[in-house]
Image (cartoon, rainbow, N blue to C red):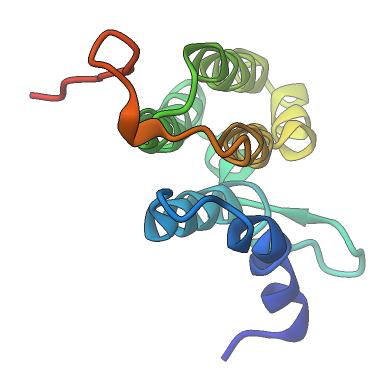
Length: 151
């Protein structure tokens, strides 16, 4: 059973999600929200009100931890592309992940940086902002779509 604080964090964006246009796949948005939560805010630091996720914890593993969490962070980018967010927003998402991976790779200081930067939460907010525009993404011509093929 979730604590009140955990429920608060998972519902932090509920109002914004509910106001999204009907054409937006809310299940995909909730999946992105969950990934951002787990990576950036899933664990409360004992004795404080501060929360961290598995991103800074896995960042303790030299090199591999930051690459792993960066790869998981790309899930938000892929879902955002599938939902039709703008190319400019996708570039911002990738830039945030790049800063997170590079900054997190610095020994010791990088783990502190990872705990503070919260790239996934930033990215989720960027996606919501883009989707809130109400632009009918289903009516885009193929030349306007952002497609990412995964083999």
